[in-house]
Image (cartoon, rainbow, N blue to C red):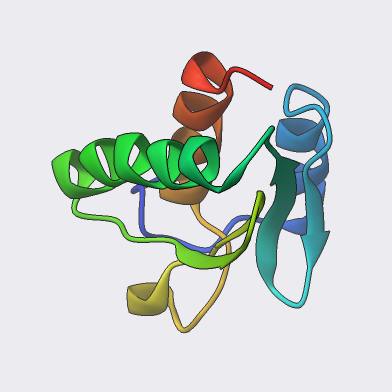
Length: 98
């Protein structure tokens, strides 16, 4: 299955089994991270941006002080969850320090 094809609900649930704390909500994979302070939260966003640029796949981010909410969906697939979203979520989990 090409990376930008929408995943079935079953495939998404299978992927979530390996993505601690992530949920499938509103046609996206979502997770909120809480850091010790604003600087650490922004550092996370910057690090995430390098992976997103490398993949040419950009998340929706919201930052309020020490909290960063991430939502992953593939706009090229009509706003559905694809293998690209699962891959980026996995990369985030590999480097996040909270």
